Length: 69
Image (cartoon, rainbow, N blue to C red; front, side):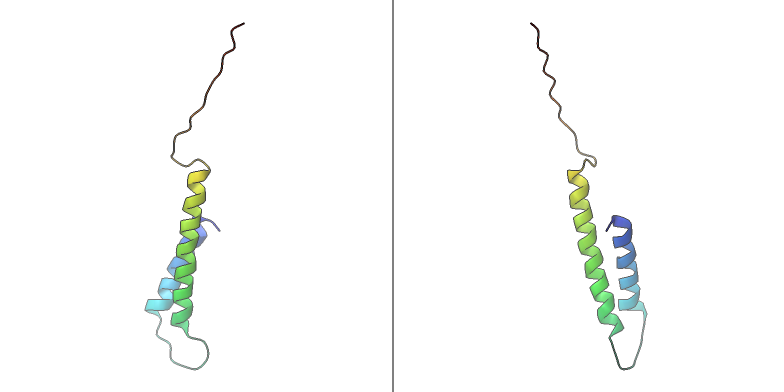
């Protein structure tokens, strides 16, 4: 799951948790919104963690060995 999908999950979860007002029996829309918010936040954190290990904006150090024989 990439950062884009995680941001979509956060946006959909926020709408379901805070903007929709539903009354009735069955599943709770607000609980599903909170779950989507949490899953999206975890996805962003994991994507950022892998992004920094794959390169990202960090610097690389390379060592060049010249053999003069």
